[in-house]
Image 1 (cartoon, helix red, strand yellow):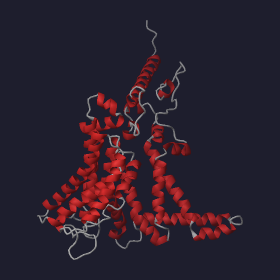
Image 2 (cartoon, one colour; image 1 turned 180 degrees about the vertical axis):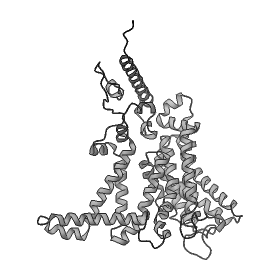
Image 3 (cartoon, one colour; image 1 turned 90 degrees about the horizontal axis):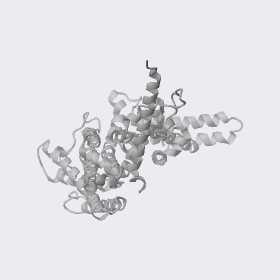
Length: 461
């Protein structure tokens, strides 16, 4: 008669699963480093797309997974940046400076003044970016939110372009130039061609995508054919684009007739994005296009063969080449698509927000897109949310300065701090005592003294 007990079977099954997980992790490390013969990539797969093995997460407690996630690091980086920004606001406030003169007599006065200065500044920032409680009508109340979405639209498109390049292992800092070239070509089609409604706007959008894609593909071609580093190439192309549009706006083909300023003619009404909620708001249908671009980027990366190849190249080019994936082709393809997405940002500017082409059409959207992609952890929807946050900073900064006298530069300080903290995840994890990804505490100990978690069996090593 068998004496086998169910508990023994469960223990054996748990040990088998732990051993399988440990073997998967060893294989993952071997793929990332070519079996120890090369250093891991600068953008490892784990930070690009989360866990490569979702079944491994099922063995971790839910709270543990949340605390160890990259999303938690990003949220805490933003929170810490806002706290440091609040301290800087308090240090530069006149009431705080006056109360500090008798701090040891009444410390509460200075602390109260500091809290008032920081809270009022951030309340004004919220009021200018999300909801105006003092608005006389509902339209005036939600006007700040529409402003945030308007500013976020080019950030979303450009950020997606940077995100795609990151996932393929390329550091695309050329979104600024790609926006400019896309906007230039789109504006030219918008004010020189006179076409029916619908067709004209469609061709303007396609022209912007084409301009950005061609400018981005130059980076991919040089990377693939000559091995030129994409950072150097994109920096140079940014400068070329900036001076090229400045020159074009002084020529008869681009400069507004009768004007000595570097500004193009107004785009035809048929070439402009229609308002999304009427003429009361500046928000246009370009935001819907940005949402569709986010869906496209998500599908491309997670549901298409091209996206799989791009992620494989980003994880390890040598292993991808061994598997039969064309690495050089992937470089060209990803920069072509990334440039096209950045070109959409240029279209949002000339066919939506501005209606004309100027030398400052790209503002700082191309460089902010890098921060947006980093904050979004190089995922399409994460980039979308990060762009909304930065759009809120831009839209609400003016109201904060007007209502409280706090310099709008504090917004730039907070954005810079976000970049600093996002670039140093170990700092955030140590400050808030967060567990490392894959670090699982033993949940249950069997009679044999072993646990069923990867941490106990070496799976997290």
